[in-house]
Structure formats: structure tokens, C-alpha cells
Length: 73
Image 1 (cartoon, rainbow, N blue to C red):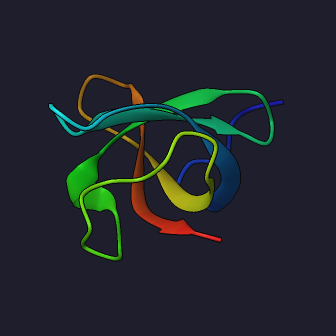
Image 2 (spheres, one colour):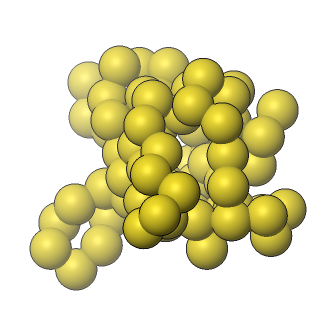
């Protein structure tokens, strides 16, 4: 099934490196999408691995999927 781009999706933070602000979300459909800490809606710039989140998934210039508007649930 194709991945819906532009929709808000649920998932869990699988990886987050606070030093560089990069992480990955394991979406409920099993796909991994990257995100940067600037996309955390609460402005905190940090999130715990294992945290349940919702994010809008977009396709960026290289065709890669990336999470934006990341909120904790």
C-alpha cells in the first residue's frame, strides 16, 4: 500500500540523538521516517525514545519522507 504523504500519522520515536537533533519515528504502518528537533511542536527540542507521537509526513526534495509538526500524544 502506498504511503499517504501529507497526512498526519501516528507512531513511536524509535531513535533520537539530542546532540544533533535528529531522530526517527516508527510509524504505525511499520515505516521509518526521519525528523529534526525543530519540528517538535512544543518547542522543547527533545523527545524521549519510545514516546508516542503524531506527525505530518512529507516528501522532501530528494524524494525522502520526513516528519514535520511532531506532537507527543
